[in-house]
Length: 378
Image (cartoon, rainbow, N blue to C red; front, side):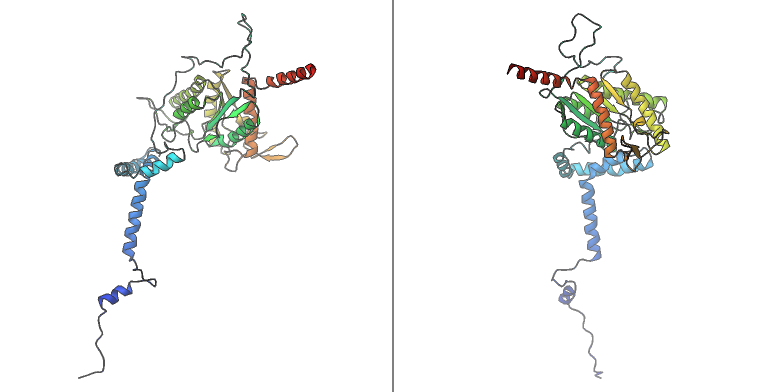
């Protein structure tokens, strides 16, 4: 019997296909497809950045988290290298001048300490009193035609005062900054695996041939862990005798390495910090650096920023009073870094050390004398 209703037709294959098309005629992807594409993109991204991921894992503090990260990123880095997928990242790093960023380098090469092999001091200028061994040698003189080359490097704390020093040097007729500030955030002497400053300093002093080097290290070294330890050497906690001995060895190595490269070293010390605990740790590092600097008179100068930026009560302060009585912000809000005004204060102290080590002004007298003589003869 005809009920007057037609049986429902099943959608044809072509109709089902058309239902999956968007308004623009393109086939719509399912959620599963999207997940697969996302997973493939993540996997490819991990392979492309595998060297950086592996180094980041290596740079973590010792512990279970680091062990797991190394177990995961080590094979990933090997696969990336085997498939040549690490080359694009390496090429980009080379272009921006940081080709060694992903290299895990913990080797520390230090010269013998000053006590074992004294470093040569800068040669005196011609005119030293002959035949008088007690006469004080004249300081090496620089002129607008023979300028003192200056290189600035260190961790993030050197950047602001370093830039102020570079600006002052560029404005001086007898100073010649070589490049800008070589400031590396979150680096130091304790972790050459993060950035190997020992190799960097040796290479840059050899290549740039500066007559003076300004550095600041230690803000990221106030912890127990160090890499690059000599074979068979282990250290205790921060500030322990073994820790201090190893850190002292590294500080001395930097100082002697710069001296052997023929440069005078100005080391900017660590300032008072807002955190009392951090200040105490900075004190430990400052004590080591200042003591090593005193062993090398005429070759190394230490700039004590602690007292320079402390309040009247010896505590941290963001503001100092200028000569005109105005409060000037000299420290950053993080309680550690410097504001530009603070950097300018340190730059002036650095220039004082350079003027004490070298003759940077007598050329003015000779120039003035020559001008008067020319006028008289005319």
